[in-house]
Image 1 (cartoon, rainbow, N blue to C red):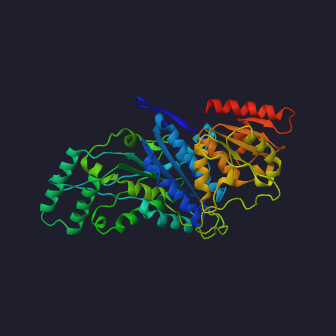
Image 2: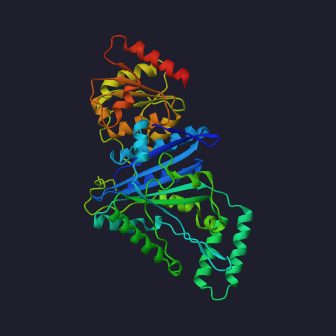
Image 3: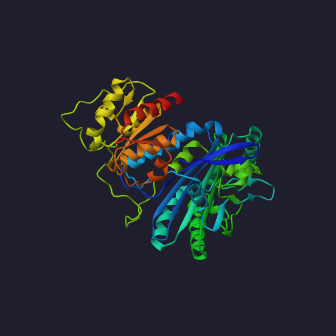
Length: 462
Protein backbone atom coordinates (compact mmCIF):
# COMPACT_ATOMS: atom_id res chain seq x y z
CA UNK A 1 0.00 0.00 0.00
CA UNK A 2 1.46 3.35 -1.07
CA UNK A 3 1.42 6.31 1.33
CA UNK A 4 1.67 9.85 0.00
CA UNK A 5 4.17 12.09 1.76
CA UNK A 6 3.37 15.79 2.05
CA UNK A 7 5.38 18.65 3.50
CA UNK A 8 2.92 20.89 5.32
CA UNK A 9 3.53 24.04 7.31
CA UNK A 10 6.29 23.10 9.74
CA UNK A 11 5.21 19.47 9.70
CA UNK A 12 5.68 16.38 7.55
CA UNK A 13 2.40 14.63 6.78
CA UNK A 14 1.33 11.30 5.32
CA UNK A 15 -1.80 10.61 3.30
CA UNK A 16 -3.49 7.31 2.57
CA UNK A 17 -6.40 6.40 0.32
CA UNK A 18 -8.71 3.51 -0.36
CA UNK A 19 -10.95 3.34 -3.42
CA UNK A 20 -14.29 1.52 -3.74
CA UNK A 21 -14.97 1.04 -7.48
CA UNK A 22 -18.41 -0.58 -7.16
CA UNK A 23 -21.40 -0.75 -4.82
CA UNK A 24 -21.91 -4.26 -3.43
CA UNK A 25 -25.55 -5.17 -2.93
CA UNK A 26 -25.23 -7.58 -0.03
CA UNK A 27 -25.35 -6.68 3.63
CA UNK A 28 -22.30 -8.62 4.85
CA UNK A 29 -19.91 -6.37 2.88
CA UNK A 30 -21.50 -3.25 4.34
CA UNK A 31 -21.47 -4.61 7.88
CA UNK A 32 -17.71 -5.21 7.61
CA UNK A 33 -17.14 -1.83 5.91
CA UNK A 34 -19.09 0.09 8.54
CA UNK A 35 -17.36 -1.79 11.37
CA UNK A 36 -14.02 -0.69 9.96
CA UNK A 37 -15.17 2.91 9.54
CA UNK A 38 -16.36 2.91 13.15
CA UNK A 39 -12.70 2.49 14.17
CA UNK A 40 -11.75 5.80 12.50
CA UNK A 41 -11.97 7.91 15.72
CA UNK A 42 -9.04 5.85 17.02
CA UNK A 43 -6.85 7.20 14.20
CA UNK A 44 -5.95 10.85 14.97
CA UNK A 45 -6.09 12.69 11.65
CA UNK A 46 -5.03 16.11 10.43
CA UNK A 47 -7.93 15.90 7.99
CA UNK A 48 -10.10 13.25 6.33
CA UNK A 49 -12.21 13.23 3.18
CA UNK A 50 -14.75 11.24 1.19
CA UNK A 51 -15.23 11.45 -2.57
CA UNK A 52 -18.34 10.19 -4.34
CA UNK A 53 -18.57 10.09 -8.14
CA UNK A 54 -21.45 9.18 -10.45
CA UNK A 55 -20.53 8.62 -14.10
CA UNK A 56 -22.78 9.25 -17.10
CA UNK A 57 -23.56 5.53 -17.35
CA UNK A 58 -24.81 5.56 -13.74
CA UNK A 59 -21.85 3.73 -12.20
CA UNK A 60 -20.63 4.84 -8.78
CA UNK A 61 -17.05 5.16 -7.57
CA UNK A 62 -16.02 6.21 -4.05
CA UNK A 63 -12.76 7.22 -2.41
CA UNK A 64 -11.84 7.67 1.25
CA UNK A 65 -8.68 9.50 2.32
CA UNK A 66 -6.98 10.76 5.45
CA UNK A 67 -3.99 12.95 6.24
CA UNK A 68 -2.09 12.22 9.44
CA UNK A 69 1.26 12.75 11.15
CA UNK A 70 4.19 10.45 10.47
CA UNK A 71 4.09 9.05 14.01
CA UNK A 72 0.62 7.64 13.19
CA UNK A 73 1.90 5.63 10.21
CA UNK A 74 1.50 2.15 11.68
CA UNK A 75 -1.99 2.89 13.02
CA UNK A 76 -2.98 4.27 9.60
CA UNK A 77 -1.57 1.22 7.82
CA UNK A 78 -3.63 -1.08 10.04
CA UNK A 79 -6.77 1.00 9.51
CA UNK A 80 -6.49 1.34 5.72
CA UNK A 81 -4.99 -2.09 5.17
CA UNK A 82 -7.96 -3.69 6.89
CA UNK A 83 -10.17 -2.72 3.96
CA UNK A 84 -8.33 -5.33 1.89
CA UNK A 85 -10.40 -7.92 3.74
CA UNK A 86 -13.49 -6.68 1.91
CA UNK A 87 -12.10 -8.49 -1.14
CA UNK A 88 -13.28 -11.67 0.55
CA UNK A 89 -16.84 -10.58 -0.20
CA UNK A 90 -16.21 -9.06 -3.62
CA UNK A 91 -12.74 -8.74 -5.12
CA UNK A 92 -13.87 -5.81 -7.29
CA UNK A 93 -15.11 -3.73 -4.38
CA UNK A 94 -11.90 -2.25 -2.92
CA UNK A 95 -8.48 -1.10 -4.19
CA UNK A 96 -5.48 0.26 -2.28
CA UNK A 97 -2.96 2.42 -4.20
CA UNK A 98 0.08 0.38 -5.23
CA UNK A 99 2.38 3.26 -6.23
CA UNK A 100 2.72 7.03 -6.53
CA UNK A 101 1.30 7.18 -10.07
CA UNK A 102 -1.90 5.46 -9.00
CA UNK A 103 -2.13 7.61 -5.87
CA UNK A 104 -1.73 10.85 -7.83
CA UNK A 105 -4.21 9.83 -10.53
CA UNK A 106 -6.88 9.10 -7.93
CA UNK A 107 -6.26 12.41 -6.15
CA UNK A 108 -6.44 14.42 -9.38
CA UNK A 109 -9.57 12.70 -10.69
CA UNK A 110 -12.07 15.49 -10.00
CA UNK A 111 -14.13 17.46 -12.57
CA UNK A 112 -12.92 20.81 -13.88
CA UNK A 113 -16.09 22.80 -13.02
CA UNK A 114 -16.24 23.08 -9.23
CA UNK A 115 -18.50 24.66 -6.66
CA UNK A 116 -17.45 25.08 -3.04
CA UNK A 117 -20.70 24.75 -1.09
CA UNK A 118 -20.67 27.56 1.46
CA UNK A 119 -23.40 28.89 3.70
CA UNK A 120 -24.73 32.31 2.69
CA UNK A 121 -23.76 35.30 4.84
CA UNK A 122 -27.01 36.36 6.47
CA UNK A 123 -27.03 39.50 8.62
CA UNK A 124 -29.66 42.00 9.71
CA UNK A 125 -29.20 45.76 9.57
CA UNK A 126 -28.07 45.75 13.21
CA UNK A 127 -25.42 43.05 12.55
CA UNK A 128 -27.31 40.09 14.04
CA UNK A 129 -26.28 37.06 11.97
CA UNK A 130 -27.87 33.70 11.15
CA UNK A 131 -25.87 30.48 10.89
CA UNK A 132 -26.81 28.09 8.08
CA UNK A 133 -25.49 24.53 8.31
CA UNK A 134 -26.60 23.37 4.86
CA UNK A 135 -24.97 20.05 3.92
CA UNK A 136 -25.00 18.23 0.59
CA UNK A 137 -24.32 14.89 2.28
CA UNK A 138 -27.88 14.19 3.53
CA UNK A 139 -29.20 14.79 -0.01
CA UNK A 140 -26.67 12.62 -1.85
CA UNK A 141 -29.07 9.77 -2.58
CA UNK A 142 -31.63 12.14 -4.12
CA UNK A 143 -28.96 13.83 -6.25
CA UNK A 144 -27.47 10.47 -7.24
CA UNK A 145 -30.84 9.12 -8.41
CA UNK A 146 -31.53 12.26 -10.43
CA UNK A 147 -28.11 12.10 -12.07
CA UNK A 148 -28.57 8.43 -12.99
CA UNK A 149 -32.06 9.06 -14.32
CA UNK A 150 -31.00 12.04 -16.46
CA UNK A 151 -27.61 10.67 -17.54
CA UNK A 152 -25.54 13.37 -15.78
CA UNK A 153 -22.13 12.84 -14.21
CA UNK A 154 -21.08 14.63 -11.02
CA UNK A 155 -18.62 14.35 -8.15
CA UNK A 156 -18.97 15.23 -4.50
CA UNK A 157 -16.20 15.64 -1.96
CA UNK A 158 -16.38 16.39 1.75
CA UNK A 159 -13.47 17.29 4.04
CA UNK A 160 -13.27 17.16 7.82
CA UNK A 161 -10.62 18.87 9.93
CA UNK A 162 -10.48 18.29 13.72
CA UNK A 163 -11.63 21.37 15.59
CA UNK A 164 -12.05 22.37 19.23
CA UNK A 165 -14.61 25.15 19.79
CA UNK A 166 -13.09 28.38 21.05
CA UNK A 167 -14.80 29.45 24.35
CA UNK A 168 -14.68 33.10 23.34
CA UNK A 169 -16.32 32.35 19.97
CA UNK A 170 -18.97 30.32 21.83
CA UNK A 171 -19.71 33.31 24.09
CA UNK A 172 -20.06 35.58 21.07
CA UNK A 173 -22.39 33.09 19.42
CA UNK A 174 -24.45 33.03 22.62
CA UNK A 175 -24.73 36.80 22.65
CA UNK A 176 -25.81 36.78 19.01
CA UNK A 177 -28.51 34.20 19.82
CA UNK A 178 -29.83 36.34 22.70
CA UNK A 179 -30.05 39.32 20.35
CA UNK A 180 -31.86 37.19 17.78
CA UNK A 181 -34.34 35.94 20.39
CA UNK A 182 -35.05 39.54 21.37
CA UNK A 183 -35.54 40.70 17.80
CA UNK A 184 -39.14 41.65 17.07
CA UNK A 185 -40.77 39.47 14.40
CA UNK A 186 -38.06 36.80 14.30
CA UNK A 187 -39.74 33.55 13.09
CA UNK A 188 -39.90 31.00 15.92
CA UNK A 189 -38.71 28.08 13.77
CA UNK A 190 -35.70 30.11 12.62
CA UNK A 191 -34.78 30.96 16.22
CA UNK A 192 -35.17 27.28 17.20
CA UNK A 193 -32.84 26.33 14.36
CA UNK A 194 -30.21 28.81 15.57
CA UNK A 195 -30.45 27.33 19.08
CA UNK A 196 -29.85 23.85 17.61
CA UNK A 197 -26.79 25.04 15.74
CA UNK A 198 -25.38 26.65 18.89
CA UNK A 199 -25.69 23.30 20.69
CA UNK A 200 -23.91 21.67 17.76
CA UNK A 201 -21.09 24.18 18.07
CA UNK A 202 -20.69 23.39 21.77
CA UNK A 203 -20.05 19.70 20.98
CA UNK A 204 -18.27 20.23 17.64
CA UNK A 205 -15.34 17.99 16.72
CA UNK A 206 -14.70 19.03 13.10
CA UNK A 207 -14.85 21.82 10.59
CA UNK A 208 -16.59 20.51 7.50
CA UNK A 209 -16.28 21.60 3.88
CA UNK A 210 -18.02 20.29 0.74
CA UNK A 211 -17.17 20.66 -2.96
CA UNK A 212 -19.16 19.41 -5.95
CA UNK A 213 -17.90 19.16 -9.51
CA UNK A 214 -19.05 18.48 -13.07
CA UNK A 215 -17.43 18.48 -16.50
CA UNK A 216 -20.16 20.11 -18.58
CA UNK A 217 -22.13 23.35 -18.32
CA UNK A 218 -25.44 21.48 -18.74
CA UNK A 219 -24.56 19.28 -15.76
CA UNK A 220 -23.63 22.37 -13.75
CA UNK A 221 -27.04 23.95 -14.42
CA UNK A 222 -28.81 20.75 -13.34
CA UNK A 223 -26.70 20.33 -10.20
CA UNK A 224 -27.09 23.98 -9.15
CA UNK A 225 -30.87 23.55 -9.44
CA UNK A 226 -30.77 20.27 -7.47
CA UNK A 227 -28.74 21.92 -4.70
CA UNK A 228 -31.16 24.86 -4.60
CA UNK A 229 -34.08 22.48 -4.16
CA UNK A 230 -32.21 20.62 -1.43
CA UNK A 231 -31.47 23.92 0.33
CA UNK A 232 -35.14 24.94 0.35
CA UNK A 233 -36.26 21.50 1.51
CA UNK A 234 -35.67 22.59 5.11
CA UNK A 235 -38.53 24.78 6.36
CA UNK A 236 -36.36 27.29 8.23
CA UNK A 237 -33.88 27.60 5.33
CA UNK A 238 -36.77 28.27 2.97
CA UNK A 239 -37.01 31.69 4.65
CA UNK A 240 -33.40 32.47 3.71
CA UNK A 241 -31.94 33.55 0.41
CA UNK A 242 -30.86 30.51 -1.60
CA UNK A 243 -27.13 30.49 -2.46
CA UNK A 244 -26.20 30.81 -6.12
CA UNK A 245 -24.06 27.60 -6.20
CA UNK A 246 -21.69 29.04 -8.77
CA UNK A 247 -19.43 26.61 -10.66
CA UNK A 248 -15.93 27.89 -11.41
CA UNK A 249 -13.54 26.46 -13.97
CA UNK A 250 -10.30 25.59 -12.20
CA UNK A 251 -9.41 24.36 -8.77
CA UNK A 252 -11.50 26.92 -6.74
CA UNK A 253 -8.66 26.98 -4.20
CA UNK A 254 -8.61 23.23 -3.67
CA UNK A 255 -5.37 21.27 -3.46
CA UNK A 256 -6.10 18.11 -5.44
CA UNK A 257 -3.24 16.21 -3.84
CA UNK A 258 -4.43 16.93 -0.32
CA UNK A 259 -7.99 16.92 -1.67
CA UNK A 260 -9.06 19.76 0.55
CA UNK A 261 -9.33 23.54 0.56
CA UNK A 262 -6.30 25.36 1.94
CA UNK A 263 -8.39 27.37 4.42
CA UNK A 264 -9.77 24.16 5.90
CA UNK A 265 -6.32 22.61 6.25
CA UNK A 266 -4.66 25.65 7.79
CA UNK A 267 -7.61 27.13 9.69
CA UNK A 268 -7.84 30.54 8.03
CA UNK A 269 -11.57 30.85 8.68
CA UNK A 270 -13.04 34.24 9.64
CA UNK A 271 -16.42 35.18 11.08
CA UNK A 272 -18.41 33.55 13.89
CA UNK A 273 -21.27 32.82 11.48
CA UNK A 274 -18.89 30.81 9.26
CA UNK A 275 -17.60 28.79 12.20
CA UNK A 276 -21.08 28.09 13.50
CA UNK A 277 -22.28 27.07 10.03
CA UNK A 278 -19.36 24.76 9.29
CA UNK A 279 -18.86 22.63 12.39
CA UNK A 280 -20.07 19.12 12.98
CA UNK A 281 -19.56 16.11 15.25
CA UNK A 282 -18.14 12.60 14.94
CA UNK A 283 -21.57 11.09 14.38
CA UNK A 284 -22.09 13.14 11.23
CA UNK A 285 -18.62 12.35 9.91
CA UNK A 286 -19.19 8.62 10.33
CA UNK A 287 -22.63 8.87 8.74
CA UNK A 288 -21.04 10.41 5.63
CA UNK A 289 -18.14 7.97 5.50
CA UNK A 290 -20.54 5.03 6.01
CA UNK A 291 -22.83 6.31 3.26
CA UNK A 292 -24.38 3.40 1.34
CA UNK A 293 -25.16 4.62 -2.17
CA UNK A 294 -28.31 3.50 -3.94
CA UNK A 295 -27.68 0.80 -6.53
CA UNK A 296 -28.44 1.81 -10.10
CA UNK A 297 -31.46 -0.09 -11.50
CA UNK A 298 -29.25 -1.57 -14.23
CA UNK A 299 -27.08 -3.17 -11.58
CA UNK A 300 -23.95 -2.01 -13.42
CA UNK A 301 -22.52 -0.25 -10.37
CA UNK A 302 -22.94 -3.13 -7.94
CA UNK A 303 -21.72 -6.64 -7.46
CA UNK A 304 -24.03 -9.61 -7.70
CA UNK A 305 -25.04 -10.87 -4.28
CA UNK A 306 -23.40 -14.29 -4.00
CA UNK A 307 -25.87 -15.40 -1.39
CA UNK A 308 -23.81 -14.14 1.54
CA UNK A 309 -26.73 -12.10 2.87
CA UNK A 310 -26.00 -10.78 6.34
CA UNK A 311 -23.81 -13.74 7.30
CA UNK A 312 -20.17 -13.35 8.31
CA UNK A 313 -17.56 -13.94 5.64
CA UNK A 314 -17.21 -17.64 4.78
CA UNK A 315 -13.92 -19.56 4.72
CA UNK A 316 -12.63 -20.98 1.44
CA UNK A 317 -15.08 -23.76 0.54
CA UNK A 318 -12.47 -26.48 -0.14
CA UNK A 319 -12.28 -28.81 2.90
CA UNK A 320 -9.03 -30.02 4.39
CA UNK A 321 -7.84 -33.10 2.47
CA UNK A 322 -8.39 -36.39 4.28
CA UNK A 323 -5.68 -38.92 4.95
CA UNK A 324 -2.87 -36.49 5.78
CA UNK A 325 -1.42 -35.48 9.13
CA UNK A 326 -1.45 -31.74 9.82
CA UNK A 327 0.93 -30.02 12.27
CA UNK A 328 -0.68 -28.13 15.12
CA UNK A 329 -0.83 -24.34 14.63
CA UNK A 330 1.30 -22.30 17.03
CA UNK A 331 -0.69 -20.46 19.69
CA UNK A 332 0.73 -17.10 20.66
CA UNK A 333 2.18 -13.97 19.12
CA UNK A 334 5.17 -13.45 16.79
CA UNK A 335 4.30 -16.50 14.72
CA UNK A 336 4.81 -17.21 11.02
CA UNK A 337 1.44 -16.66 9.34
CA UNK A 338 1.04 -19.13 6.47
CA UNK A 339 -1.00 -17.98 3.47
CA UNK A 340 -1.88 -20.77 1.05
CA UNK A 341 -4.62 -22.34 -1.03
CA UNK A 342 -6.17 -25.49 0.40
CA UNK A 343 -5.91 -27.27 -2.93
CA UNK A 344 -2.11 -27.02 -2.45
CA UNK A 345 -2.15 -28.47 1.06
CA UNK A 346 -0.74 -31.89 0.12
CA UNK A 347 2.28 -30.15 -1.44
CA UNK A 348 2.99 -27.90 1.52
CA UNK A 349 2.23 -30.16 4.52
CA UNK A 350 5.74 -31.77 4.42
CA UNK A 351 7.25 -28.26 4.43
CA UNK A 352 5.05 -27.12 7.32
CA UNK A 353 5.74 -30.28 9.29
CA UNK A 354 9.50 -29.88 8.87
CA UNK A 355 9.30 -26.24 10.02
CA UNK A 356 7.17 -27.22 13.03
CA UNK A 357 9.58 -30.05 13.95
CA UNK A 358 12.45 -27.56 13.89
CA UNK A 359 10.56 -25.31 16.32
CA UNK A 360 9.39 -22.57 13.95
CA UNK A 361 6.13 -21.04 15.27
CA UNK A 362 3.86 -21.58 12.24
CA UNK A 363 0.16 -20.65 12.24
CA UNK A 364 -2.39 -21.35 9.53
CA UNK A 365 -6.18 -21.37 9.34
CA UNK A 366 -6.62 -24.76 10.96
CA UNK A 367 -6.43 -22.73 14.17
CA UNK A 368 -9.78 -21.00 13.61
CA UNK A 369 -12.73 -22.33 15.59
CA UNK A 370 -15.96 -23.05 13.79
CA UNK A 371 -17.92 -20.27 15.49
CA UNK A 372 -15.36 -17.51 14.87
CA UNK A 373 -15.64 -14.74 12.28
CA UNK A 374 -12.94 -15.61 9.77
CA UNK A 375 -12.02 -12.12 8.66
CA UNK A 376 -11.74 -10.85 12.25
CA UNK A 377 -9.50 -13.74 13.32
CA UNK A 378 -7.30 -13.62 10.21
CA UNK A 379 -6.77 -9.88 10.52
CA UNK A 380 -5.76 -10.24 14.17
CA UNK A 381 -3.42 -13.17 13.48
CA UNK A 382 -1.68 -11.28 10.65
CA UNK A 383 -1.22 -8.23 12.90
CA UNK A 384 0.26 -10.44 15.65
CA UNK A 385 2.56 -12.33 13.26
CA UNK A 386 6.28 -11.72 12.98
CA UNK A 387 6.12 -12.46 9.23
CA UNK A 388 3.98 -14.02 6.50
CA UNK A 389 4.98 -17.09 4.50
CA UNK A 390 3.15 -17.25 1.15
CA UNK A 391 2.96 -20.52 -0.80
CA UNK A 392 2.36 -19.24 -4.30
CA UNK A 393 0.56 -21.22 -6.99
CA UNK A 394 -1.92 -20.22 -9.67
CA UNK A 395 -4.68 -21.26 -7.27
CA UNK A 396 -3.24 -18.81 -4.70
CA UNK A 397 -3.21 -15.95 -7.21
CA UNK A 398 -6.81 -16.67 -8.23
CA UNK A 399 -8.06 -16.93 -4.64
CA UNK A 400 -9.61 -13.74 -3.29
CA UNK A 401 -9.09 -15.12 0.21
CA UNK A 402 -5.32 -15.42 -0.27
CA UNK A 403 -5.08 -12.06 -2.03
CA UNK A 404 -6.74 -10.20 0.84
CA UNK A 405 -4.28 -11.76 3.33
CA UNK A 406 -1.26 -10.82 1.21
CA UNK A 407 -2.48 -7.27 0.53
CA UNK A 408 -3.29 -6.65 4.19
CA UNK A 409 0.14 -7.90 5.28
CA UNK A 410 1.77 -5.63 2.70
CA UNK A 411 -0.36 -2.67 3.82
CA UNK A 412 0.81 -2.96 7.43
CA UNK A 413 4.45 -3.50 6.41
CA UNK A 414 4.56 -7.11 7.57
CA UNK A 415 7.65 -8.97 6.25
CA UNK A 416 6.64 -11.41 3.49
CA UNK A 417 8.47 -14.41 2.08
CA UNK A 418 7.17 -16.14 -1.07
CA UNK A 419 7.67 -19.84 -1.81
CA UNK A 420 7.07 -20.51 -5.50
CA UNK A 421 5.25 -23.84 -5.87
CA UNK A 422 4.88 -23.46 -9.65
CA UNK A 423 5.05 -20.91 -12.46
CA UNK A 424 2.16 -18.48 -12.15
CA UNK A 425 0.49 -15.71 -14.15
CA UNK A 426 0.29 -12.89 -11.63
CA UNK A 427 -2.82 -10.71 -11.78
CA UNK A 428 -5.45 -9.07 -9.55
CA UNK A 429 -2.93 -6.48 -8.36
CA UNK A 430 -0.34 -9.04 -7.20
CA UNK A 431 2.21 -8.64 -10.01
CA UNK A 432 3.79 -5.40 -8.81
CA UNK A 433 3.50 -6.38 -5.16
CA UNK A 434 5.03 -9.87 -5.33
CA UNK A 435 7.83 -8.97 -7.74
CA UNK A 436 9.26 -6.72 -5.02
CA UNK A 437 9.38 -9.52 -2.43
CA UNK A 438 11.98 -12.13 -1.62
CA UNK A 439 11.00 -15.46 -3.17
CA UNK A 440 12.48 -18.94 -3.36
CA UNK A 441 11.49 -21.96 -5.45
CA UNK A 442 10.25 -25.14 -3.82
CA UNK A 443 11.86 -27.05 -6.70
CA UNK A 444 15.38 -25.83 -5.86
CA UNK A 445 17.74 -28.55 -4.62
CA UNK A 446 18.81 -26.30 -1.73
CA UNK A 447 15.23 -25.31 -0.89
CA UNK A 448 15.19 -26.41 2.77
CA UNK A 449 18.37 -24.53 3.60
CA UNK A 450 17.27 -21.45 1.62
CA UNK A 451 13.90 -21.41 3.37
CA UNK A 452 15.39 -21.72 6.86
CA UNK A 453 17.95 -19.01 6.13
CA UNK A 454 15.31 -16.60 4.75
CA UNK A 455 12.96 -17.19 7.68
CA UNK A 456 15.75 -16.72 10.21
CA UNK A 457 16.73 -13.41 8.63
CA UNK A 458 13.14 -12.08 8.61
CA UNK A 459 12.44 -13.21 12.17
CA UNK A 460 15.67 -11.57 13.35
CA UNK A 461 14.53 -8.24 11.88
CA UNK A 462 10.93 -8.47 13.14
